Structures are given as C-alpha cells and as structure tokens.
Image (cartoon, rainbow, N blue to C red):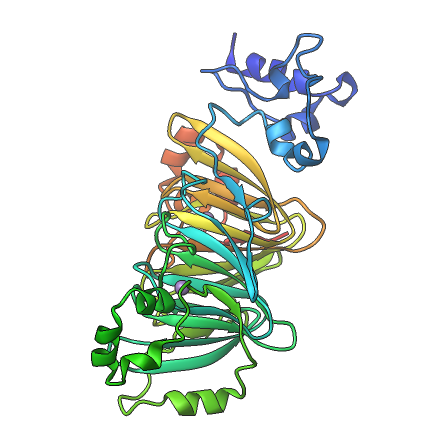
Length: 418
Ligand code: MN
Ligand code: MN
C-alpha cells in the first residue's frame, strides 16, 4: 500500500461519503500513522466498538470530551497531566479555607505544588514560614501581606486582584483578607511536595518552647506567656487590621525596606506579546526582581485562538486555569501524545521540553497562568525554529513545498492571530 492510498483510507473512515474530496483531506482528523494503529474513534469498526453502556456519571464524564473521544493523533498515553482544585478537599477554619494539589495526589508535578486559599475580611493565615519559595496570584478581593527579609528589612503591603507576591524560601510572612469581601488567591510553591498543611508556625514554636527559655529569649517574665494558644491557629478570624500606612509605620526598621518589593502588579503589565488571537504577560526576575525561583506568564487567548506549538527548555510548566475552556495536547518521546480538557480552577502540568499547544475551545476568553521553577521565562517556538532552519532540510523532513514553508511565522507569535 502506498502512503497516499493509506492516507485516503483513513480519511475516508472518518468522513461521510458525501463529504469526501480535497476539502476533507485538509480537515482530516489524522494523516495516519504508519507504525501503530490509531487510538481514536476512527480506529473502531466493530458494531459496538464505540459504545459505553457501563456505569457512568455523565456530569463528570462530559467534562472531559478529549478523554471520551481522543483525537486520532493521540497515542500510547502518559502520566496524567490534568488535576484540579475543583475536586480538592477543602479544610475550613474560622477565618477561611484552603485546598491544595500537591505531588501526593498529582504525581507528575515534581517542581510545583499549588494551594487555593480563601480568607474572610479580617481572616488571617497565621505568621509562618517554610523551606520553599511561595509565589501567589490574587484572584479575588484584597489581602494584606507582612514579611521581613534576612537583613531585617520588613515589608507590609496590600495586594488586589491581579497582583502577585513572592516570598523567598524561609522568609516569614502572614496574609490577611481585607474588607469588604476578603481575599482569594492561588499559591505556587517551588517544590511539588510542599504542603500548606505542613508549615513552620509561630504558635507551634512558642507552645513547644520551655517557658524559661521564652522568658530569657524575649527578656520578659515567663508568666507573660501564660495565655498562649496551645494549638496552632493556621487560619483564624482576626480583627480589621486598620489603615496600611499605620501598619507600615508600626513595622519600620532603621535597616530600611527590602532591596526589591515582594509584590508586583501582573495584570497592569504591558503585554510581552500581543496578536489578534490574544496576549502573553510575563513576570519573572527581569521585571519582578524579587522572584528569583519562579517565572510566570499570564496568557489570554481569544475564542478560537491557539497558543502555538512550543516547549520550554528550562523548566516544567505548571498551569492554573482562571477563565474559559482549554484543550491541550502534550507530546512526549515514544512517541506519546495525549489531549486533555481544562476549565476554571483546573491545573495542568507539562514536563520540561515536552511539546504542547493550548487551544481556546470555548466562546469566551481563555485566561490561564504558566508557572515555571526558574528565574526566567524561556520558550522554543516550533514555527520559528522551522522558519530559521535551512529550507531544503525542512522540506526534506516534512515533504513540504518551498511556498508552504515560506508562510510559516518566523517571529514567534505565541498566540496565533485569528
Ligand atoms: Mn506561606
Ligand atoms: Mn507552555
């Protein structure tokens, strides 16, 4: 069988007889795979080979059209790269709640773990620290952060929706929801094993230090500590913290302020790349100087738009979907290719240098974050690479004409213009 006849057969199986023709070839679900049988529905020929009469929960199943009906180009599977806060267990306390997606339940996410937290107005995530760096984006409301660096320079600041913060590993901090509606945010730790339920907390340490040591350490009588909480507070309902200026004044140090602020306004950032298909805003240590171990890209894709085929040579990508509906295919060695669907509150993960694209399959803007454990954002674009490789070489590889190759975008668009 020639390649061409095989191709025609595969296309024919996918299309109704009436639709056959040149136009069908262009829209073919697959050009066929000479090495393996296809894995999509296109491969099913038995009378019941496509049906699914067994027990199912349609509400859940229908959220995953690409798992129910994978593209014919998917092959061989790979470790799951879809997870979500939507089905993560919420831990409630008086001042709010938190839930997380860590490597414990999302094996692929080696470099980043994620936390989704809500603080009521006045709700406090208690003073604490941890071995990992903490990057966060505000998704709703307002929040007050407090911290101090290793040179003894404090920062107290208020953050609003679209702002981000970064606390370097080991620096202590607190978070408090502000009026009128409190705060909700998503944290990314630069270690997949990190957990919000396992941090070093002020109340725990004080309760587990002998009273005479507390007295000697703080230079006050041991009796002064008689009312300390004996269980940690984690998230508690606090009082309104008052005006920011007063808090900043009360925390002033003769050592001054940290060299670089630990907060940054990501949503106000001019687009790093913009096309008619959408835009990318990048915050990494080149503009958000404090963010030494996390780089982030906020991606907006218009309906029908495509985040181009690309990969990241420097780090795994952890994704947080904020708005809209996405479909992503990840390409791995093997070859392996798998497609998954994402909605608001979902999490995606792509290992370093694995190829991928993200498509807006909804009818509203798609907005998501790409987070990398790196001091800088880096990307290789497939079309830019091919446009800047000797044409003859590319033409030999893909059996393309010089005309077609000349139309490939040569200047990494990031989001293909519609
Ligand atoms: Mn923290
Ligand atoms: Mn990417």
